Image (cartoon, rainbow, N blue to C red; front, top):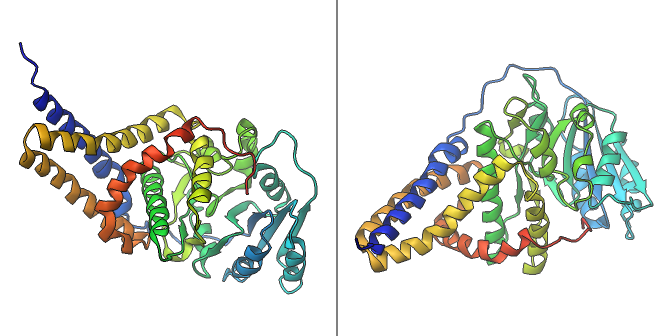
Length: 372
C-alpha cells in the first residue's frame, strides 16, 4: 500500500487551519464582538494608584501629572516608589508633591536580597497604599483620558477582584513601531479573549487593577519571587478566575507608552516576558502553545500543499482563514484603536512566523535580573 504524501500534507494543512479557525471563532470573536455589559451605578471607592520607577526622572515629569490630575469624584492617591534611582527622580517627585497633595513618594535606598526585578518595590507600594483598590501602571505610561481611574474602578462590581486594561504604545513612524504594536495587539487579543471566555491567564503591569486583600490573601509574589519578571502576568495567572476577573475596553481606560526604538532593547523586553510564561498554569501553556504551533506550521504546510498537492485547493483553504482572520482583526483592531495596522495584517501575520523563530530561544534563556 503506497503512501500518498501530497494528500497527507494537504490533510495536515487542513487540520492546522481548523485549529487556527477554532481559536478565531471560539476565543477571538469574544473580543471582536464584545458588548460592554450594563452595570448599575455603584458606590465610588477610594483608589491607590501605584507607580514604580528606577532612573525615570523624565518619564515621571512627563507622565505623572496626567495621573495626578485624573477626573475622579472620590478620593485617590498616587504612591510613587523610587527604587534606588541614581538620576533626579527623587527631586522630580519632591517637586510634584508640592502642588499635588495626593502624591506619596516612597524612597527605597537598599536593594532587596533574593527578590528579583520589580516585585520588591511594587510590594512596598502595595503595603503602603491606603486604599483597598489598587491601580497599577508604569512611569513611562500616560492615561489615554481623564476618566482612566473611574473606568478601571468601575469594573469592581459583582464580586470582581481584578480588572485587566489595555497598555497601548504610541503610533510612530517606522517598521519597528508597527511590529511592536502588532505584537502588543496580538497579545491583547489573546488575554482579553481568554478572560472573556472564563479563562484569564495574564494582565499587563502598564494597566492593571486588583484588590489589596487579594494580593495579601495569596501571599503576594512569594511563589515566584526568584524570577525577574512576572509581577503582573504570573500573579494574575495564579489568582485570576472566571468569576473574579473583568476586562475594561473603553478607549479612555487605555494607557499609552513610548515604544522601544531599538531592536535589541525590544528583544530584551520580550525575553523577560516569555521567560515568565514558562511558569503559567499547564492548561494555559497548552492553549497558548497550540495556537503558536498551529500558526508556525500554517505557512510551511501551505507552501508544501501548493507545490506538491493542488494549488487552488490550498489557496481556497488559505482564503477561508484569511477572511475569518480579517473580520476578527478588523473588529478587534477598531476596538483597541490599532486600525491603521489592519491593511498590513496579511504581511504582519507572515512576519509572526519569523517572530517565533526570533524569540524561540527565550524559552531557554535566563533573563536579566534587572527590571529596567
